[in-house]
Length: 302
Image 1 (cartoon, rainbow, N blue to C red):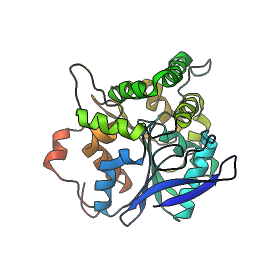
Image 2 (image 1 turned 90 degrees about the vertical axis):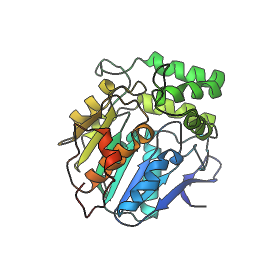
Image 3 (image 1 turned 180 degrees about the horizontal axis):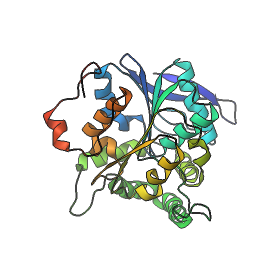
Image 4 (image 1 turned 60 degrees about the vertical axis):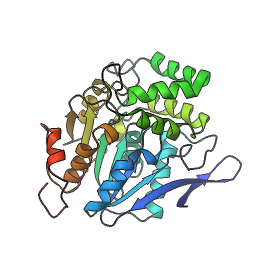
């Protein structure tokens, strides 16, 4: 099994993260969201390596097949874990893609490690710049929302995650963008996570201020967000985050909720490749174009 040592726990036992590694070429590193694992990148791991890219995705500590220590769920430690992955695999000219909570790892890594090894950055449905509502962050979310999440996780983690999964994909009474099988798959992915990690990561992504981290980013940066995201609302996140990164660009997916890597997988794959290949990403987009026109290799026009 592919494991990288990223540190030790309080008992001196090695903490290891599991990773998947496919394809050849300039690497794209995928950092997953809460409360899932690298398996949530299924459609990106299957498609992006077909286009001259090396694609690496790893399980955050506490999730998936990685070690599940008691501590280490603050963003400084999580960014250190990302650095260990990049260093151990000796990746260069990297595009970091941070989804949801994973956007925080990207921002903190870029600040803490001065953007070493990184060529491009993509934030997808990301929690940046600062989710918590405070006096100097009036666009944030009330602390009571996150307190209730933690309370409900402690009360019945299984039921909470099942309900959360529906919101994650925008599943409503009249809107069913994913099948029940997909919801079951996501639930099965979330349940093996450490309950401690699941709760502590809510505290981390809800209370960490990434505004100063974002200001350090000097590489080409793209924010992608769903207009109807109720999990990490656009107005509280990407619309604010783009203001903190010089020359960053925001692309909004109309009608999309949070889980873009599943519900808008073809468009997201296309946009990642377009951006990595140094081409402009479309603002106005007809999803039918993806079905009619296959993604082309980096040597062809996209």
